[in-house]
Image 1 (cartoon, one colour):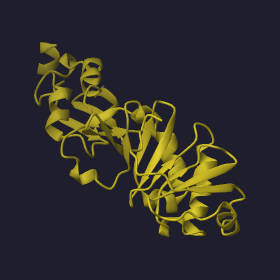
Image 2 (cartoon, rainbow, N blue to C red; image 1 turned 135 degrees about the vertical axis):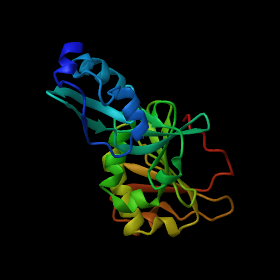
Image 3 (cartoon, rainbow, N blue to C red; image 1 turned 135 degrees about the horizontal axis):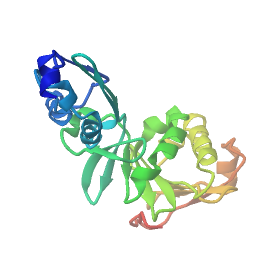
Image 4 (cartoon, one colour; image 1 turned 180 degrees about the vertical axis):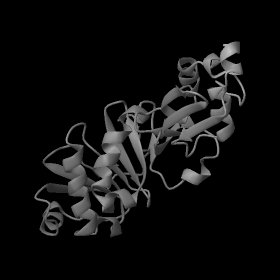
Length: 239
């Protein structure tokens, strides 16, 4: 190795591609290549292992390119959502991997998901919401319930209870209720969509519920609508 360095096989250039969010100093430290070191003393495999331990790095390709260049290509994790669990926030990617829990203010426009196993289940439900922009725009949080299904907390505080299966169909129905029937303009606190052939609209205490016949006449969803006015209650995310 010493002879190779004297022969000019030393690190003179480090070519890095794909770094956008990972900190330069973190990448440099993990790479471990110093200008002037014998290039044959540099271990690409060990560098790859160190780099892929960085939270922003999903995959790394590291090569020695003789006589004097270290080549590095990074594939970074793409932020998907903010994940809230036990009152703490973290940034996650599509695989549910935590990227960071620091400096999250710059990601405030990302969807918020809530619940113990929400991170690993988030990609599918968020894709469903993206397909219905009117619902996505109205949603402030997507809450995982008992590891079985999702609730949507809308920006005006309304809770929408989605079914365990058929979330895409339920969200499509909700999009119609919002866009065509203007259901969010009504004085309601919850929409229960857990049954496939009907939905239950819960009004605020003291508000006279619309009759099922009246609601059905004004809705084109083809579902039976039952309007109820329960006493004020806490909506438990474990139901």
